[in-house]
Image (cartoon, rainbow, N blue to C red):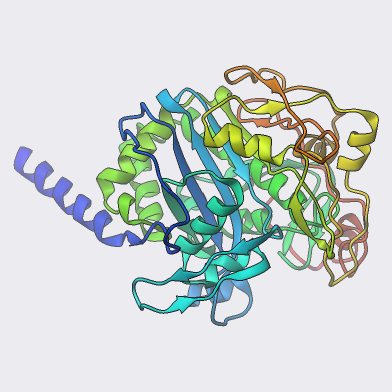
Length: 426
């Protein structure tokens, strides 16, 4: 029996190990000087999670609705693990953020990609791969990225199925013809394609822009985190294998994470962080001056970047009536066009999206290392509160958008006008 178990374990190890795709961490030489890290957890760690819209496989083509070369990094989240693994912060960077993408060289092909000035950060993935997105995020934030993990459409589907689905709530009927998400008011268990539709929706929540989508993603991920830990997935061998099998097939990681043992180490460190000390935030932003559909880092963004780069407590600030109004989504989205992004802090935008009243400071029950006031960035007005979504605090129902963000009008009207379209989940 011991020999059979050992043989089976060896087969599983090599089976999972062989599924892992990996590539270089940085493709832009000289863009960072990473400090020495202690892999046992005594040093902070930053992992860039990338969601790719690639259509490189038949499965991704079918899910994405079309096929073609290239890919964009449409989801970019910096996962910061504090030294000692006592706290975690997940910061989303909007895909429409304008940055200077550095010159990158793909080590696999030797092809060099020129630098791109004033480009959307999601286009960095086309400059050689995820290593260039890592370089662009580092150039934007000053945060040293230790690892990356990239997942595509099919990977999201398989991994959401592996955990048995994730429960989310919407406060009204919603239909986004672009992402195909269609849900009735209430709570739903999202599996497979329905989970991907929820994560991809741009025109169902908020004012139809990327900020609304990111907040919905935070609600989904916080629910996923709670379920994974509460359901004992990490201690159930069968459930853990299903998740590991889906993950190793779905993920592309940096060379430093190649191998099952490396991924297991990261998973173990993530599991050590209490859910009530895990926060989800979005980079503070303002409309880009030359194009209101794009974004620039807003007041308070540099303070957040510094906090994550130096492993310090996240900043927060009291919100005035003026900054609260600035933070709420106000401008409509033209059908088929981009959204005019509202400025201000992510916390107030989250409140508006979830239908909550804005309040200064961190979410109820969440105080990782304590919160300090934000010092406004030089030359800017004070920022609104950076109020994170806590992984264990009740998120409530995601507020469905009330503006004409679809060709049928509001997402609620789109739902009513398309009874022939089946709901994404019961």
